[in-house]
Length: 426
Ligand SMILES: NC(=O)C1=CN([C@@H]2O[C@H](COP(=O)(O)OP(=O)(O)OC[C@H]3O[C@@H](n4cnc5c(N)ncnc54)[C@H](OP(=O)(O)O)[C@@H]3O)[C@@H](O)[C@H]2O)C=CC1
Ligand SMILES: [Mg+2]
Image (cartoon, rainbow, N blue to C red; front, top):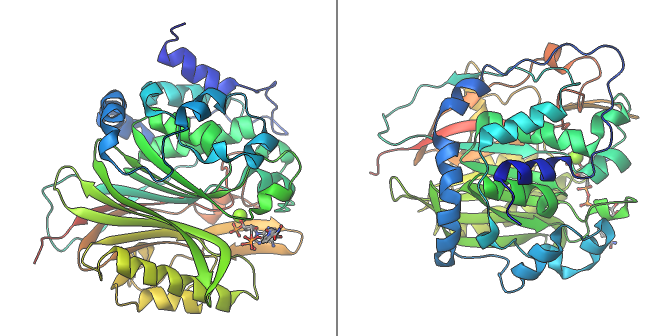
């Protein structure tokens, strides 16, 4: 039976949603984000959504990292797989059938999200900071978003966010906060970590917004230790199909001192449809915790080595997004900053001297106390690319005394968003 996109969208969002719970005390009324509103007038995502079906038909031209032989099977099973089944059967690794992609109007999805979130306090306001660029660009900028979205199983079962009420982590609402953030900034390229709802949430919804996605789970995800988990967490990389064509894709299991580790990366070569220029985009999530600095450093070296090969020795411009779990003082950061790939960290450009990373990208309170760190980065080829603007971070006041995650922000890590343009070719 035919269902309108609106009804399908609504069904996806509200599936399994029990009654909404209110945060303690009366929440202030929700307001529209001033940053979101003007961009939603732009035809970018609407065009992408209307193009989604066409692109889906032509996607046999592109490289499919997970294969599509059994995708029909996955599609048929996706809605009925239970969490434990998803983690035990290989079907969860298979992408949904692109022929079944039904475009959604991003405005409608945003409205759906806002309806689910109506009892929550308002979204935080963040502004883009324009940055001086050396040369003008005739093409629209490429917007890149980096975000550790917090795995649902880890948030509920492992992370010990002692000041965050469990109601704030409820998936049916938290997923709408995550989607709202993505829809507010409308990235062309979206790099995510700690994704443990790829196949039941992000892949189906984002593909209907015109994105093509790839997911690479951690081999031994700690999510699998959590009761009622939704499968392993991993990295996910999405790009808008009306802006890029996938040329090549690599799922990388990182090694440390030649040993295979539990951390992964995805690297893809994309061809920009407006300029025909190629870009390599990578996403990673390095090993967490203190005491593992040398391990992270080795993982970083392995990733850099892989990227050397993939970019043909830095010939292809590169953007690396990740939760590096490392402060700028750590060895792995220094390897990236001094690599022959000639990378710069985009968020340094927000500082007065252009040399300092922001004071934090994650801020939470665990049983061990307050954890405020700079761990997330967007690295870019400093010769081939310019950062046109960057989304400012949340202030301490916005984050509030209970820190993150919270009723108004869904993750313990902040999203980083930058607009890039290609520099003139020499
Ligand atoms: N069966 C097996 O053979 C194996 C099982 N495992 C399982 O995986 C787990 C570790 O996997 P690994 O990939 O190395 O995980 P990591 O140490 O990299 O951390 C996993 C997650 O825990 C979060 N985290 C960081 N610090 C803390 C903290 N203090 N308290 C709670 N959570 C924190 C991290 O979030 P963030 O990045 O946001 O800080 C990260 O997403 C093991 O405990 C085990 O359960 C792992 C390997 C082999
Ligand atoms: Mg985490």
